[in-house]
Image (cartoon, rainbow, N blue to C red; front, top):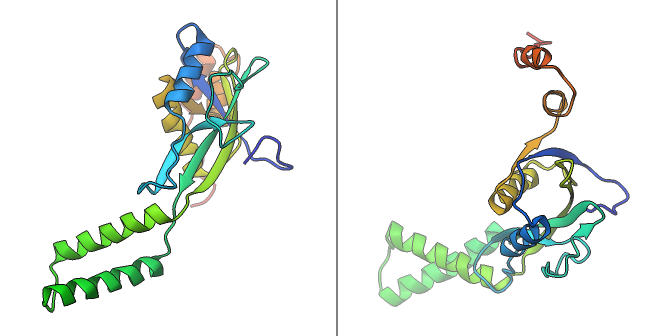
Length: 204
């Protein structure tokens, strides 16, 4: 989901930690190192990485286009290949029959069947294009806040993992409890009381 969409879903994060100076150079290097890889002509069925906000199919971060005012703005791109099960079964059966006819046998071992299936999936992945899913984000480095334009569990998990791997910083998802603990001006006594709170069950 994009920043410029007519309707958006947002997950807010607190960014824990700081990047070494010079910050702009460090961020650019991290984005470039973990940029998304093209898998249309590869056997991989999934690729996760960073891409440019203004052009999601361009991974040239050298020009600093990810900096807008005090914010870092870029996108998470998740490319996936999905092969229909019936297509896999069709080619698997054809290859099985071919192998049995060539070998003159009536049965194939479990290992041989697995090898055939893996080979079929490998070949099909080379032939089909990946479907890209793009999720924008805005990172205010000075205030340690980040807005991710998706509430999908899978997308958020990919973001948290890749962000930590790229920048060696931890993302803490903000909801009422973490917001009170991290962003509200609570005293130490109040934070202690907050830590002792337990959920209330409204149904037995």
